[in-house]
Amino acid sequence: MNTATITNPIMWADVPDVDVIRVGPVFYMVSTSMHSMPGCPIMKSVNLKDWEIVNYVYDILEDNDAHRLLDGKGIYGKGSWAASLRYKDGVYYVCFSSNDMDQFYIYRTEDIEQGTWERSVIPGLHHDPGLLLDDDGRSYVIYGNGDIRIKELTEDLTAVKPGGTAQLLLEGEREDIMLRIEGCHAYKLNGYYYLFFIEWPRTGNQRRRQLCYRSRGLLGPYEQKIILDDDLGYHNNGVAQGGIVDTPGGDWYAVLFQDHDAVGRIPCVLPVSWENGWPVIGENGKAPQAFATKLPAAEPKPLVISDEFDYESNRLALNWQWNHNPDNGLWSVTERPGHLRLRTGQAADSILRARNTLTQRTEGPACSAETVLDLSGMQPGDRAGMAALQNGFGTVGIAAGEEGRFSVDMCVNGGDGREEIVESVAFTGDRVYLRIDFNYEDSLDQASFFYSEDGTGWKPIGRTLHMRYTLDHFMGYRIGLFSYATQPSGGYADFDYFHYIRQN
Image 1 (cartoon, helix red, strand yellow):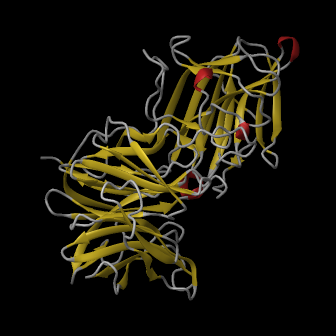
Image 2: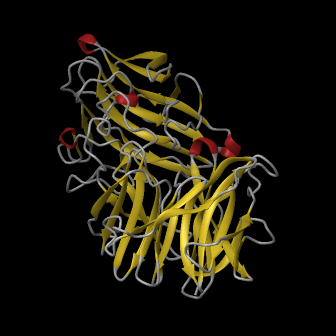
Image 3: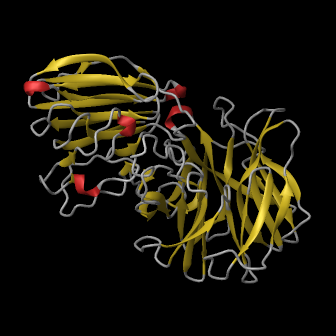
């Protein structure tokens, strides 16, 4: 059997707050998706290296003005955070908190790849929750930042158990700590309760590091160890936050993530050994860049895809996510076969406040995206094109003026989300080709913008965008296709294709 060699990162893209389980020979992973819809992606792998998106936990989280981008602010950087994934007795569970809703959500399904999910809602934040499905049939959520609490759930995990355990479980260090322990992943193994956390100290290497707490009793007392403090040689950015998983052959691995600046937070897989009942991550205290496994080799599946928009039904490939809740009456891949049609809706003054922006991740070390836009359905005041999407955005697209006049504009965030035109060029064709090149090599974090009349002769426009990962969006840069109106709506933009190339 050919076996897989894991090279870190396993995905050079924004897949943060990872949590992995194994069911039989198959691994499943959930990650944070915040304001992107559908949300809580479920990925599948047979070797921890090659992952494929197979489902989402929900199409939309809530149907209110903020989630629909109709309140002027949206839920950027909010929505679902740090989900926990567990499996027991034929049922899969996913839980997370939502900061903007001040609620804790638990979803369940018997079919993680094709099924729909039933949800339960519990009031109050349960920050970075870790589900613990104990071997005595009782279930708990362990959560918090610094002060870690435990709360018992009902047998079906739909509510807090009346009269059940609910207390402070342990307190993390306070001295010389920038970020106290959080990001709980909880396990019961060989008679021990293991709780994994990250913290960020002001002393020592001054980077995020992985801690493990263990106890023979659920409620303690707990002892703790630092089990990884390494940056994979990358700008002192610690590899931390995540959990562990075993293989069918009995080997153990940790699945963690690392901050990689503008591209986002990227997942890494590291070997785990056991010494005196403690998990030891890496090799001699270091996170290896590459290592062999006994897991089967597999055909890699792309995380970001090209798309000809050739669909038989009005349902997009799972690689696409909308920026906030879409207005499903205003987009189609079947109305004009072979095209993505984005109709304008409520007027907006910026890409940040425009609904129905369709997005995919970007990837390092470098990647490029191209599309072609048919202008014939655009009306005066419409804007359509392609974006490098974060708070510090850059866009290249068409602005429709009066009397059939058009211009190609490159815009950036001029402050408070308003679009500042860096360069505007008059355009007379009926189709425009647009391209953005992204370069994340060694955190160069630059995006360059181009347009063409024929798809071969490319002209640069505007300026290089120096991309920055900011916590108001809390997400790596995405590629977005957009169409919105700045005055009364009724127009539409047709995208003929989306072509994506990743440079390794």
